[in-house]
Image 1 (cartoon, protein in one colour):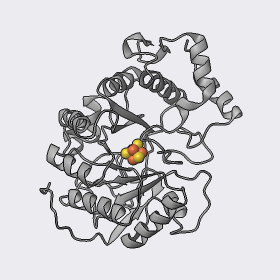
Image 2 (cartoon, helix red, strand yellow; image 1 turned 90 degrees about the vertical axis):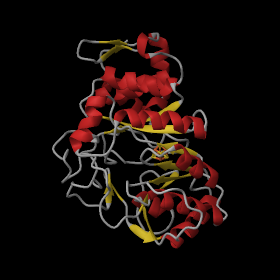
Image 3 (cartoon, protein in one colour; image 1 turned 30 degrees about the horizontal axis):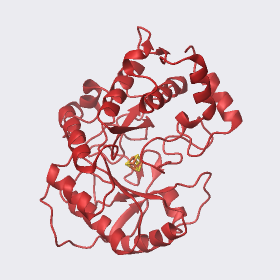
Length: 340
Ligand code: SF4
């Protein structure tokens, strides 16, 4: 990766998630739920240098580069996006901007330029960046130009799965230990609670393995955001299935309780097959928390709701972008089986 630069070339093109593009008025369309964060993606002619098996942008996947997960990301003139973004922030429609980055040599330059462009348009909005592990100087530069939070996606819950889906066994550049070190360094640079990671449920991990990794994140002041595996045509995982909804619900509950300090990995009881049988809280507490619907909302940076990133609006809804209804909570309750 290049050293931080002070003189930068303007960004000409940028990708915007289709939901964000509708919110910004760049395209017309109907939204079941509006994204409260505007999601941008660095534009690259060609593919990402990394090779994550689940990702349509991966170097050796033959999938459509318009996509990330099940969402399409059309390309726009960058200046048009920045001026629409200014309006959207002013109207209160955009509460955060998330810049997602592919892995390529000039990525730091592009992240700095995009952040500066947003700021120079007089837009006062918190900015998250989600990217590959950076070194400390690079992270500091991002913070200096105004990035509020940094995300480094682990995606996998264990080293074996990580190696298989984005590390050496996948022909990718990433190393489990280095991702963890970068996350710990990001906490030092950005401050406690200002670093996130993404964890994908459904890559073959058990609930016990996922819960252990969530606990590691929380102990180290890293916010774990949950995703459900979404198999995309022409990726290496196209024939995989999405996680069982009951499995996902139990992981959501465990994450919520650990993040809120109401339980710990050591207090949770698992079956031999790694499924949760007890969350280590009383039945009353569990029932009240399920009734609130909060554990089943999208997790991540403040105001990041990623509508339908992992699911069709017709369901099943893994991450609720808005408060689940009474009927939906009733259904969620029936999905969380055999736990106390
Ligand atoms: S949690 Fe949301 S806003 Fe934060 S980095 Fe991930 S996608 Fe972006």
